[in-house]
Every structure is written in structure tokens, then in C-alpha cells.
Image 1 (cartoon, rainbow, N blue to C red):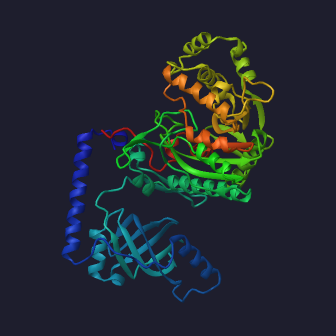
Image 2 (tube, helix red, strand yellow; image 1 turned 60 degrees about the horizontal axis):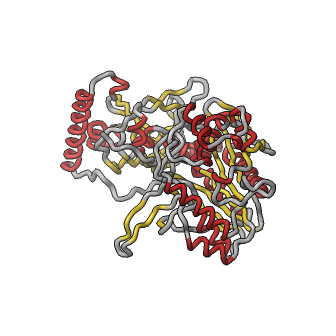
Image 3 (cartoon, rainbow, N blue to C red; image 1 turned 180 degrees about the vertical axis):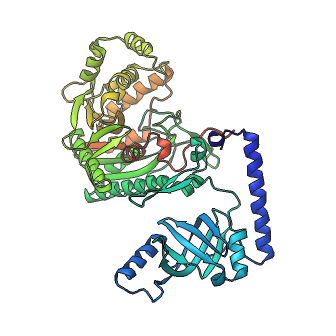
Length: 521
């Protein structure tokens, strides 16, 4: 790649074209020899890691034969390295569990098969190898190939890096040949193929989501599914993606949140529900924002935001314990500790301290001027609530490194939250911040249909003034509230950001397998 070699794009393109041509020629030669280059299946007996374990077990039990050979195995994987030594050759075959050395000998395979190995295989090819396990003179557990099969010919070279072995520990470290970060995201298949550390991030992601489900199920929540395609979007402040349903001749929207449908289910009689779902928001790209993202939302009848704080605290600690086994972690150079109770502060006093003045005493014009002085974006059409939120994000949020609940948001910011019992200008809402980023958002849910209608109408006024993210009036949701929503607490947690935190990744693109990208040039 240009960043690694310093050569220009034309030279690199020419080199790649030459490699592609040579691999196609090898494909033709394989076909001429009657060798199928793309197999239907391969009956492997062991993953490479299990093959290693098997040999060690047999070695310790004294079950090797007189030559020092162990059991025969059939392994399959990518050919990651190849070293030819005249009438013999060594290669490394990698599968999802690890890699294992393979030893090819001309007098074992036969001349024709050995020549095929030497001349027609390429790095990146998928191969199956059968033979006994043994140790080489350098103590490397190896398969002595008695038979091999080409499973898939690689017609394009992978951006393989170098693998180095730590002399003290024996651990192998692979340095990826992918220097272009944008190319890694765009060709995630190649990124995964050459970068074991990236594969580990996504294994951890799976473990995180699995541990979230374990917690929710244990707490008696029912996992449900709600529509991704909706006639009216709602439940958050965001612009939607829209499409056209031709049969119904109507505009439809990809959901921006699951909230309004999940609360309909509480109306219907379920006490506790949750959903892990893809949401879609038509917004810009950043380190912490992808238009398609994964949310956990859960709702509990007969609860308020204090109950949900306890639930979130216990959930976070459960996930950290289950996935990391240590409540202190490093994130982008910062140390974060998940020990209860998490710190709790209040929105308006925290912002007052940062501004040096009570924000409640500032007019909308003064708030906007403060925001302009900080060069904050997207101020056009922003109402008072959004201005307060932007100022909080700029002046307070970055310093919230340890897990911190921020309580009692202004009413203008929270059209779906109940008014605070002690101050109707505020709402019973909290957000959880860790390492300067929002992790969770929760309310004592608004269950008064008359107040909810007024809030929606206020949002409509903001839309008329230019706020494209203000929420829309949902008559069916109000009708559901009119049937009666019991006191309810609700929570939304961005799972992508949680994965970022627990895997120490600096960009949301590093924890989404196929992130949204700009058009490839």
C-alpha cells in the first residue's frame, strides 16, 4: 500500500494487476490438471487449537508411537505462510481457533501432489490437510501431510502482515498489512482474515450482548420484537430515514428508537419487556455515531427512574464481571472503575458550575450566544432544551470519566419523561456517562396522555421553527396511553458504545462489522 511502500498508486495498481494475472493462470493450470479449485465440503476432524491440545494430551499420557507421532487429524483453514526447502516445505494453516504448522514432503505426498503444493498454492488459499501430529526438532507441533485438498483458491492476495514470535513467551503477534483504516472498514472481510485482534473484538462484542441477555432474562424481562419499519417515527430526538411503501402508497420510516412500541406492550399487560435492536438515525458520522446502531431498551412497570438507576448499575457491573473479570479497565489512556454506587450529580447544578451562572436565569438568546462563543455546531433552530444540552456536552460531559449518573434534565429536553415531583421545570430522567460518553438514557415514563399530547404539540412548534429532529405527534401512541400506562421506568443503552468501552476501541467503526462509509472513490 502507498502508506507502507512510498510508491505511487499507478505502480501499486500495476503490481496488483500482475499478481491477479498470475493467480488466474494458476487457476487455469489447476483446472487443466483436473483439480477442483472450489470444493463443496471438507470433513475436518479437529480445529487447529484442539489438534494442539490433543497432541499434548497424548504426549503427556505416553500414547505417541515409536516415531513420536500422535493421532491423525484432518484440519482446514487458510494458508498463512509457506517455506519451501527443496523436497520438503512448511506452511501454517489458520482457522478460527488459531494456526498449526503443516509439513509437506515429496516422498510422502508423491511428486505430482508435491509439485502442486509448491507451484500452484498461494498464501490465502483455503486448504484441507490430513496426517499425524508430531513435534519438529524446534519443538513445534505439526501435521505431517499425508494428503491435502484445495478447498478454495484465493484469486486476490490478502494484505498479510508479519507474524513475530516473542522469544520469552513464545506468543505469536501478527502485525496487519492493512495500513489504510478506511480500507479496513470497507473490506472488513479482508481485515478479519489478516487481523486476529479484530476478530477478538467481535468475539468480545458477542460475549457482551450475550451477558446483557443473561441479565435481562434473569431479572424477569421478556425479550420482544417491535417494527423496524414504522408509519410514524418517535421515541427519540433525531431525523429518520424514510422510504416509500408502494403497495400501501405511503411514506414509512426506519425506527429511530423502540420506545413507543415497547411502552404499548406495558399498556397491554407485560410487566417487563426488553429489545436488542437495530435503530437508524439520519445523522452525520463521527467516532461515536453511526447511522445504524444497536440499542438495548427495557421497560419495567411499577418502577421509576430511581429503580432503573439501580437496574442499570447492576447490569453494567454484571457485564463487566462476565466479560472482563475485572471491574477496572483502561479506555483510551483513562482508567475506569465500575464499583457501586456510581456517582450521581444533577444536570442544572453541574451546568451552573461550568457556566459560572445559573442557566435558568439566562435567556434563550444568551444561551445561544454562549454556545456560539464555544463554536458549537447546529445552533440554527435549536430550542432552549437543545442549547442547554449542547452546553452541557461541551462543558461538563468530557470530565465525567468514572461511571456517573446525571439526573433531572430540563423539561424541554425530555418530551417523554414525567415532570419532576419537586420541580415541574425538570423531568425525572437520568443519563449514565462513562469516559466522557453517554452510555444510558432513562426516564420515569410520562403516562399522562393529556400531558403527552401537550408535549408533542410543543415539539411540533419546534419543528415549525426549524428543528428537524423534534418529535412528531403519534395519535395511536396517545390512544394507547388513554387505555392506561401504569407507572413505568424505561432505559436505553447504546450497545456499540459499551463494546467500544470494554474493548478499548476509539471509534464506533471498530466495533461495527460493516459501518456506514462515504462513497468509495
